[in-house]
Length: 93
Image 1 (cartoon, one colour):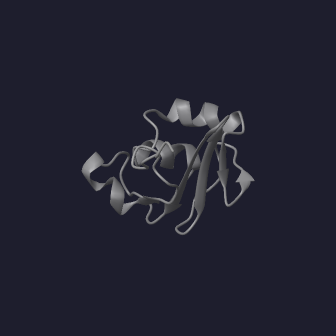
Image 2 (tube, rainbow, N blue to C red; image 1 turned 90 degrees about the horizontal axis):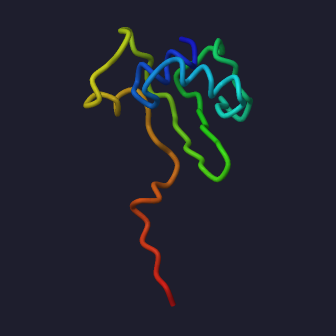
């Protein structure tokens, strides 16, 4: 499955056109290699979305067989492997 299609199908990004733009601008990489929109995704691949100071890392768990999946089932298709900054507690000392 194409990376742009995968990112929109599993609800990582809202629209495929956004995924295509991000790929064309070098924001998306698969296994540390910058990905074009047509790059194929396989189970076990590591996807990184990196833009300025923002960075998210995902691992592909499965490929969807339908165009879109419910958000409640997203966790079956990918796993976020980057730390979630919202959950971190910063202590001022």
